[in-house]
Image (cartoon, rainbow, N blue to C red; front, top):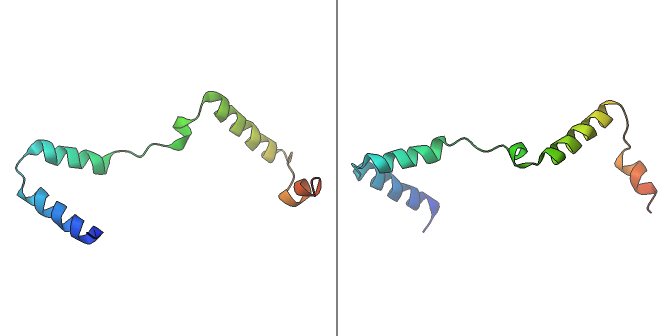
Length: 72
């Protein structure tokens, strides 16, 4: 079954229902705020990223080509 057919079937089921709980559940699915990946990080990981950003701001970094030359 293709996606368009599935969507049409869901639309029909939604149009036919009189159950407010079903409608509210579907509404929650579509309005649910997407979780920001930053929130999944530990405080230690966040601090490491912030530290890395500060290093970049201060020019304390090397480009990939310079870095890889040490190992080839």
